[in-house]
Length: 115
Image 1 (cartoon, rainbow, N blue to C red):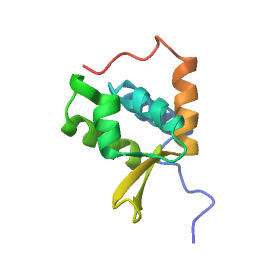
Image 2: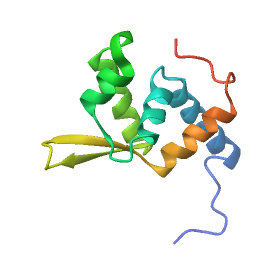
Image 3: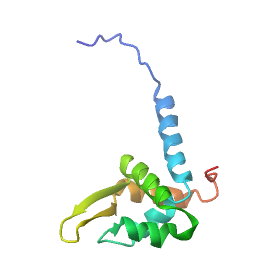
């Protein structure tokens, strides 16, 4: 049973700053915003190949697309669903991804690019 005198280990300000830092790290990745913008326009989702070729194109690699999608999926900004009819996986933007995209558009120019 927790005591009424239990001390907080982390302050709310610290937690808020850590969460903010994580959001900015994800938004600072080169392909986060283009991927989210394309997924927002694709209600039927997008295949990995469509993201790799159509969004990343010749400026990146399949490894870049896979790594970015993995981080966005892990953060809950993108959802990956298996599509039995097509025999592939489809990626969809989530509500959290929509919120992150809206946030990034409000702060254009404030987030430094990935080094």
